[in-house]
Length: 124
Image (tube, rainbow, N blue to C red; front, top):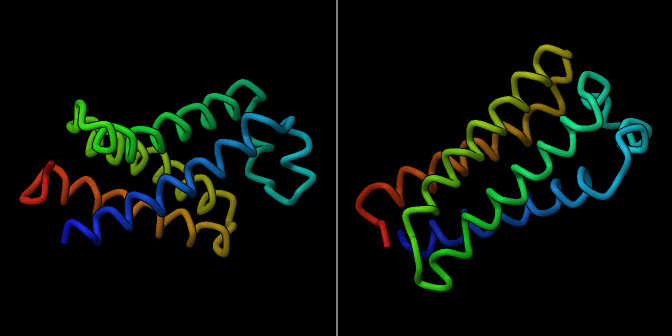
């Protein structure tokens, strides 16, 4: 099970890093122009804050166990990302972007899986 949790955490972290990179390096209007219309409902600062939260969550998923310090941060980061990505699901559903909500829902499930496993029997 530990291997599956590492795979899930690694994939979720990679997705968080990619999403954060986009939100932190691109202006909001460019994000909208690229087809991510959800950003229309947020300010520039809010998009950057979401990106920063995703970056920190991605770091929290993999770095603490890799450096063997404060491993409790991994399931906490997973819970934080699950909540953040749940907000993405709600945003997509409200905007009737049903095709776009599926990836966010999958990421929520991955984050919940990591949190459950790392808080439970397979903690570090």
